[in-house]
Length: 548
Image 1 (cartoon, one colour):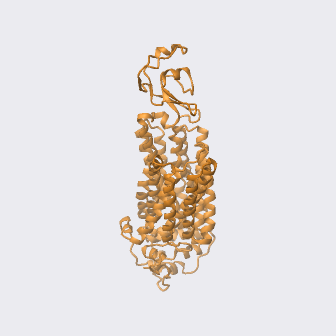
Image 2 (tube, helix red, strand yellow):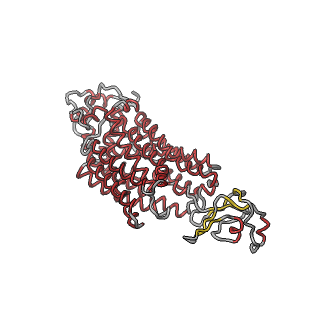
Image 3 (tube, one colour):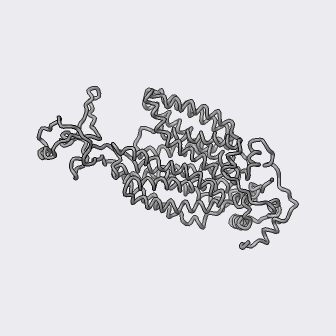
């Protein structure tokens, strides 16, 4: 069944006219607070040096007579360094410390911390580790807390993606935005780690409904010539969010409540989007919502100062007069082997990207690292935009993955720290390139009726990669370079697998699975033009009323 050539509709409406640019930049700006949710845990959950508390009013000191009296330590003769125990203390009478010049009895039995811990707050004022004492026997709660946002994203990206394909992009987007604000605000007042973790899971869940749906709306808004540019700008604004978050964390010295409250409050400025952001024209036509589609086309033409041709609707929507609304669910997508194969390859690349980006941390301050990552991502996205516009998607993603693999292997065996760090940056650069192209191909390949849930699946796999990263790094206990040798090998393999992906440059966005088959070369449906001899749809659009 042939569908409307919406690419032709967008060209007639001005391609990237004034109204499209307005909506496009609305979406760009929403990417900034999306980065807050995605990256905030690196500041909210920072763990700092600590040791057992002796007195209630005690503060952290790097070296003190009191510390030497009560805290066990070991001395390394080779490095001439002292290592203090973080989870144990001498079980001695506190009255011994009334005079710090007293000789301490080091033969007393060692016990676990009896009165909590004191933390180094010189750089990070108050993180959730400090607030809830997530150290020593409770350290597993800290590790679990760091996984909550990725777990929420993993679940939310699939569920909200499916809902947005069924109920509409705009409604699910704004509901997610509202919930993100409310949940973030409530989580600020967490009284314990469980409360906090539930809030973080919910934030990851609802964040997916903003980030993914915004990108889908943006891609469905523009013509094929502007899609690479759209993804580049979305990714660059997301990187700006990294940098902004780092500045905010530095201002608040990672006080978790102040930072979470501020980033949650930022969502208030996006409430007018309910009135400003339109529904996707592609989704409206796909679901036969002709009245709203008619209004949106008229509104776009009016803002762009475009005079529509005579019989515009009759010529462009003739075959939709008698069509029934189609619902392609996640299950039907899973039963389509060609689609599943390509989606699996894209998902694996996303998983690996998240694993390596999480694992290959640069040896710099926590505040500086997101800024460097943001700059790398912006540079990589801009280069990717130019390359895919000239050479296509498939060749560039394969080359980027292979170059990343070579850089990873070089970094693993580099003796000099600066050389190793340089190649780590290079690998991050090429991986960032590959990731933005993966998102672009996924959006361009998937049909409108499953576009959001399909992108949600790939995004879910990237969240799984974030969770798996610490476990992959455990391989260094067998041999230090082993994790990165595995990374390098898999990168090259995935670079080869990416050659199976369809080339989506200058292709119309498919409306259904038949048109997806055309993109991968199994059908010519996407090249068929709608018949021009049926005028019923034009008459129907004019005759319908909102009450119908």
